[in-house]
Image (cartoon, rainbow, N blue to C red; front, side, top):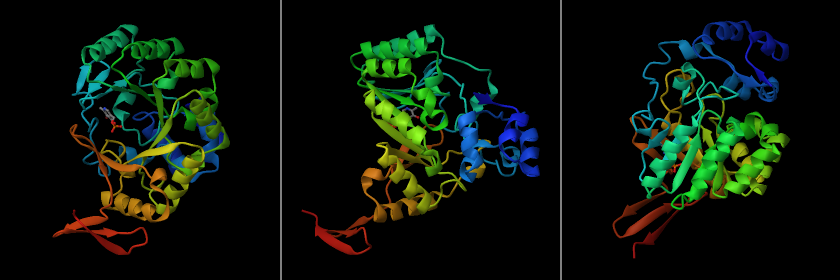
Length: 342
Ligand SMILES: *Cc1c(COP(=O)(O)O)cnc(C)c1O
């Protein structure tokens, strides 16, 4: 069930006068939408609340200075109306702008202003034929909006088409459904489509340990059983998850449910999102400390996505340097050792 009206939100959440004001003033610019499940999660979690409820900062010109509608130039790198081709071997298909939960920090907030769009069948065909004609493309990202909310016959058409293209080795679906409405992941028809498509990997999107519920775990397990490895992309968000303790707990909780942390994204400079941005140095310090505490198997790549379309750059806190014929390294517990470069 989808909740969009202030009256319905009030039935579950006690809103402060400031939150009421924000809802009324911001929603005409940046709409509100939530599943009942995620709204209930916000009742007991202030970080979830921050990701879900409108804030006056979204429309504060001073706070949003420097923010752009499309900082990554996804529109400029489009090769067909729904397909962005930037890296030689990977393409991105934005299949819809429809999402059941509108995250306040959304990187595609520009698409909120468009009427709801869903990729038409003929544009699935044009994307498929572009991929067929470019055999270097081995990895296809299906994003949105929420691609697992596409009409299932459309999702199946796209996945079946990609299965038939031999040069495509990996199909990644970027979805937040396991986080915002895990019950919907458990639809048998959906899981069958994913299993039959064979090449599917799931990239999901947990940002806070409060989101890793028993229901979310069940959804991820079902995807794993359908043969899809599940990886996670987190966004580093000020006031939500920008601390060592929170991210350590998040990544451990994810590993526990067999979801591999893949990326920790530095917040993109998107108009309407700038108030979630942290310094890059802070992200690096958090990751440095994580390497002292937990296995790299539970640590994602911290990455920036270059404004203008330079693509993603993963960053590791530097723990070695070359000095003459020797490398000096820093151990997990802060000691140093050297090794000759031979
Ligand atoms: C993020 C992205 C990809 C995939 O990048 P990976 O680093 O392989 O996850 C591909 N194309 C575009 C346009 C992207 O933004």
